[in-house]
Image (cartoon, rainbow, N blue to C red; front, side, top):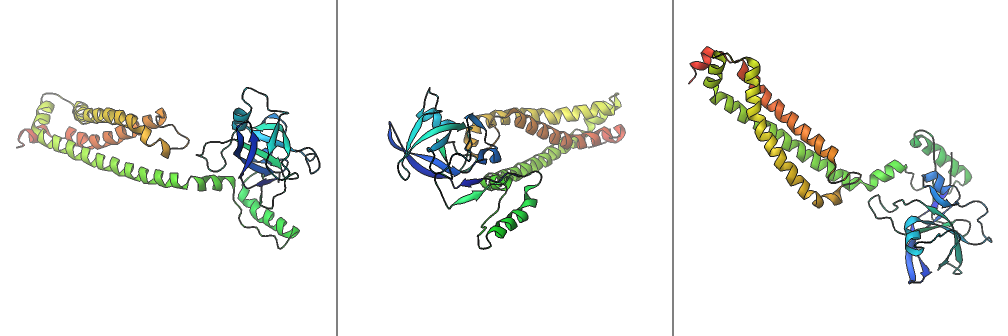
Length: 299
């Protein structure tokens, strides 16, 4: 089990050629990046040697490197901070981009400071476990209370629950849209079934005549299915074209999937075709069982 500390994400000014620029920063302890799964791309991570009294050091993310050190190697360069004492801190490592405020936010320039060089009382304990992290909640809480029974443990969250909480609005919208889509499919199936049933009823004499002249049940089923599915394919083509042209209006509601994801469009198309086929098949099967003599006497 790895147990580092991470600070609450904040903002701070740094002095650059552009003047004082506010960027995000975080105060962390050694092993923080390893625990949360944020790879160090270049340089090194903080260690126990980065402590009070040693030269100030920071780590930066990729947007920070691209903005303030374009076409340069940031490792070994220094940054003028505006924290207490206005220290110049050496860049010792670059970490991969990761969203912090929420999963949809654009990753902004950010730097990290070791806790031993800039103390903060507002810290979060990060715990990496093997297996279900929820089972470790009680032991971790008890361990903290054993160290200090008056220490307030305000909240314990797994990374999954924290991520899902950040997507609560998107999940609600997705659930509502799924419900509306399911209702639309059900209404479409009912409508197709009703139309095909009416078509079969109006063409009972024709179907009986075809069967009297030698048409078998399979031929009748194919004929009715063809009459029912041709409009479905035409409507599906129109709907797909309209959906592709309107995807830009829903891109802000999507996460983890492209507005024009081909797999999603293919899956929905197959679902619509399957539902329409079922709606057409029942009247078609009933039509194939019509007795030719009864059909010819049908008015």
